[in-house]
Image 1 (cartoon, helix red, strand yellow):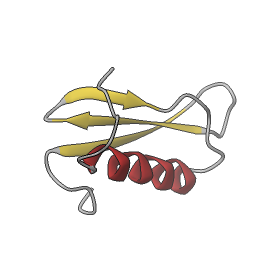
Image 2 (cartoon, helix red, strand yellow):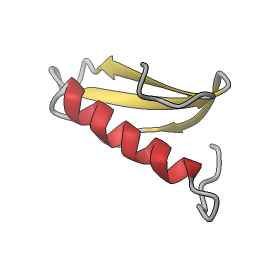
Image 3 (cartoon, one colour):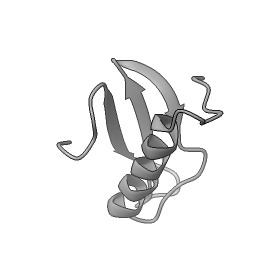
Image 4 (cartoon, helix red, strand yellow):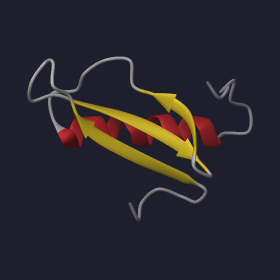
Length: 67
């Protein structure tokens, strides 16, 4: 996704349960650092939520820890 600054990447994946919902995962240099903990009703909402998480992760004062 072009809006995600390197070295981050976002994956938005459909869920089987609940059907029609999506989850996201954020990777930094290919390593998983965070995954959504709840289903999102649309792919767009999942992406929006993931972008907010990337922005939080990029802040130097962030208490963001890789999982």
